[in-house]
Every structure is written in C-alpha cells, then in structure tokens.
Image (cartoon, rainbow, N blue to C red; front, side, top):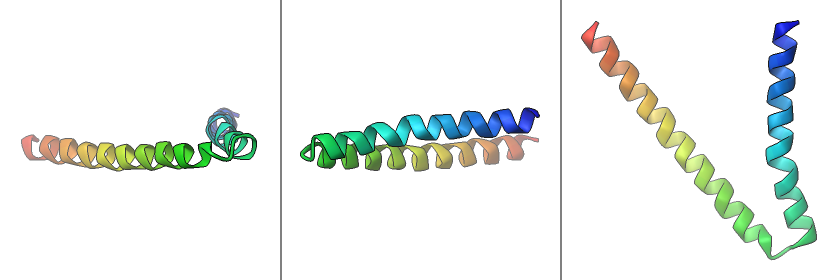
Length: 64
C-alpha cells in the first residue's frame, strides 16, 4: 500500500506540472514560448543537479 501512495504522489505532482503548461499554451498561445523556456530551464538545472550529485557521490566514495 505504501508503494501505491508514492506512485499516486508522483502522478499528482506530474499532473500539477504538466496541466498548467498545457492550459497556458491552449488559452494563451503566446505563452507557448515562455512555457518551453521554463521547461528547458528546468531540464537544464535537473541535469546539472544530477551531475553535481554524481560528483558528490564520487567524492564520498573516494574518502571511504
């Protein structure tokens, strides 16, 4: 049952991210560019964050 709650939480989060972007692009078509810029920025920072995480994990493995 706990695994289902995690999946439900993930699904709700995904809906809360995707639905406003889709609504903004349908209601205000000029916001499509801004929505894509925000999405690209989020993807960029997620990749940078994952890279930083790998660096920190590697440093912690070197110490141990």
